[in-house]
Length: 215
Image (cartoon, rainbow, N blue to C red):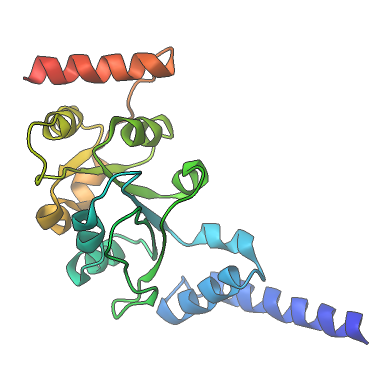
């Protein structure tokens, strides 16, 4: 009896997911799909929902997390076709409320993981602090990238690094107050893959050279 009930439940879940896929993923269907995925019923289906990954790495950058959590940014991401935002918030004090927002976007977050590689690989768009390591990983994965500079820091190379990447159309550059404005469909479509260097450490040398040339 238990096996029959489990089979019936699985069949019902598969039917529900199949129905969702044929409705074009509207808001209500997305809520059901995300609920199914996060409850562990059908985790593979989560790949069907376009996801934005926001990361601050090991830095303290509440301004980025707060900016990404604003209604205008979430609404803009929704308009661009993204349906889920996963935020890696680090050691900051600001923690977004998790769940569905008024615009339909689903927000979830965590502080740290041993590695961010899996979340970066699953993301359809990465919004990152301007650390060279995070930029390297995103570009190596050939992900659309928005680099957000911490303009509260003085005497650092972040703005130069972000500007160098933006001028070569490898990433978009923004500050927290200008994040929504930077999220342009045309600008994202114009991004070009970064030519991979022969070694990972060579990447940092190339970045330094580009920053120096722009300086």
